[in-house]
Amino acid sequence: MSDGTQEGASIGELFGRMVATLREAAGYRQAELARAMYGLSSTRLNQIERGTGHPPTLANAMALDAELNTGGLLAELWKHSNSRMFLTWSQPLMELEGSAVEIHTYLDQFIPGLLQTEGYARALLRSARTVRDEAHLEERLLTRLGRQERLDGPDAPYLWVVLNEAVIRRPIGGPDIMREQLARLLATEHNERISLQILPFSEGNFPRMGGALTLLTAPDKRKVAYTEGAEDGRLIEDPDEVGQYSAIHERQRAKALPLGMSMDMIREALEDLDRARIPGSAQALRLAKVQLQQRHRRKLRGGRRRLPRHRPRS
Picture 1 (cartoon, rainbow, N blue to C red):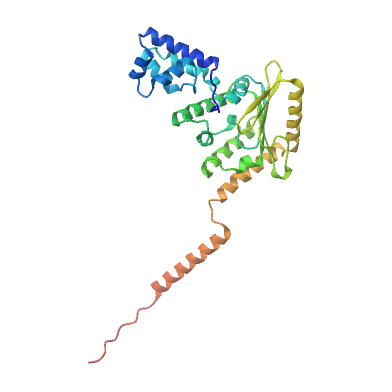
Picture 2 (cartoon, helix red, strand yellow):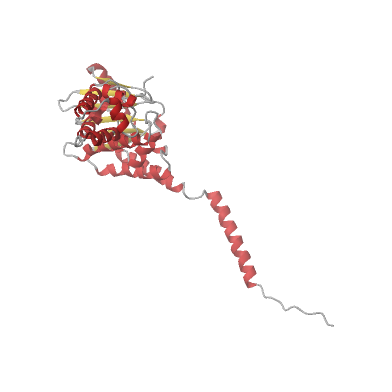
């Protein structure tokens, strides 16, 4: 089974050919270069040059630059091509997202990457099966957060998000990280190019539950749909099928709470997290009784008049 990374892709082959060309120009054989570099085996270098195996990391590119004295060429190539180093099934979405003028999405598991805080994104990536190690996690995190820059740019897309209520109730990363994430969602209330709705539990089952649905509009007005599950994703370009998914999303928006009420529900979820810090009423009552009893005992001990001791007469 594939590990979910882009194998044999043209960008990987291009990067590998560049490494091989620079290595040969520097007068190294593969085995010689691998021996000269700490932490890079001859087998791994061979994979990089052939464009096979998992994609090279930024650390690999920087180490090769240093050893081959390239002036940072490979690191620049890595950064330029990193948008193609996503999971295989999500790569088409990432490429289209970068130029879309409108993005409509429904998610029932997680906050969309475009609105994730660093803490929330890190917690999600840390649990991902496809993240190999801490260095890979940091690379994926950097790329994910970098995507958000489009929301602040002059060509920012119009983003309409519908979230299942479970998304704002599930404390990914723990209460503190989730508080920060919910505050980030509330901040979108003042962004005219972002709309956020919550599909409440009360609506019961609904189409596309158990997965994510994204609809993108390109600058030329072409519309595509993208569906994603736990282990795969599918890009849909057929106009009739895109129309069917557009209709599903319209029903999702219609069933979801209005914008203002959605923000109120997010505030409620945030308040619930804050209340969780405070002991429950029964526990608080017991605690108050114990404290009252302790104060009473201290008062009795401190206010009791001591009687003189009488010695027995001899």
